[in-house]
Image 1 (cartoon, rainbow, N blue to C red):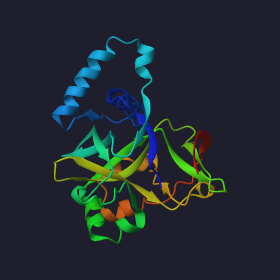
Image 2 (image 1 turned 30 degrees about the vertical axis):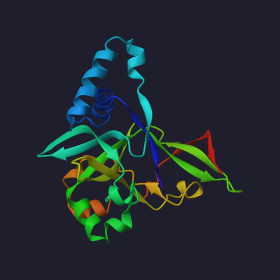
Image 3 (image 1 turned 120 degrees about the vertical axis):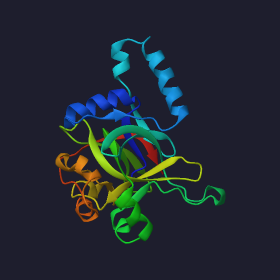
Image 4 (image 1 turned 90 degrees about the horizontal axis):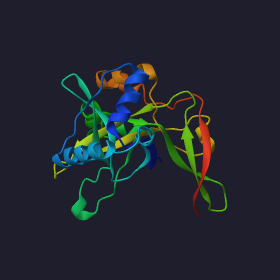
Length: 226
């Protein structure tokens, strides 16, 4: 169950990486006035920083935070920010849903509709899982993909009662590599399938929901759960 991943804190830097990797034009569109204000302020601050410092903008995306995603509207792909995690009934403290299982998407009516209509992509440089080491100890493990500076995980979004876009990312059964780390993993799209995700049919996209068997690299972090 993925609850933390690595991305870029700066949309313009992330756009450069995506455009270079996939040879695709991506716009930036902020969906709220607060985001626009923060982006303008960030631009002003960054002009006062050295280029080398400005380029290093990796950070760990965590639940309930606004993080970069790629959305699609009227034939246009654009980077924006959405809140990670869907809570259907905040007043009653309903559970936070941050991952959508591939099997649930294909069986539950709400998720089937959302998968058909409200698709996004989540750009990642890597993600984390907590590996069970026995003795009730779980070690935070960073997973990256050699040769892929950025990769895309499919996701779903909906607009809550406060008109805020919230999203989940789609998970599947583990690959042969990931089985030793966790029982689930994010769906990682093949590079050739990335932007077709927005326009392909429900059936075509459902066929993409499978574990990636490509090479992966792990690195244990100091943080652990016990």
